[in-house]
Amino acid sequence: VKLADVQRLAQAMANEPRLDRAVGTAAKLPDRFFELQDLLRKTSQELADVAKANDMNGTSLKYHQVVELCVSCHASFKAQVQQLPAAK
Image 1: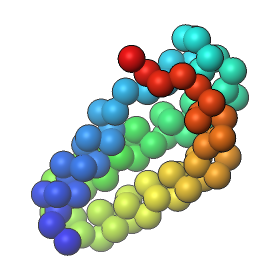
Image 2 (image 1 turned 180 degrees about the vertical axis):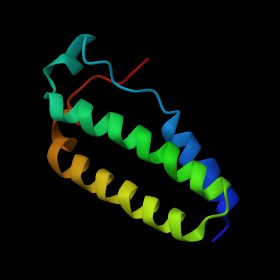
Image 3 (image 1 turned 90 degrees about the horizontal axis):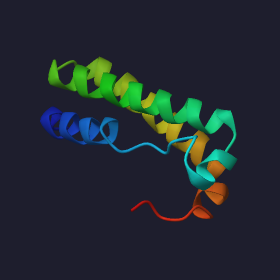
């Protein structure tokens, strides 16, 4: 595993634009969606930080937390998000 690659990709995830609960059809999504979105951003940043510190154990732990968040959110909200218009 190249921790520099993990750091770069995790940082990109942390920096992704977020859906704004107050704008357009995103307002129809439940609060839990936005809680998971914020937690993913936070955990992705933590993953980038531990990878940058060359902490393999911390990187592994944070990676698994990110994957669990992704799976949880996609399982719960994928159909609802796909119905939203694409961001411009």
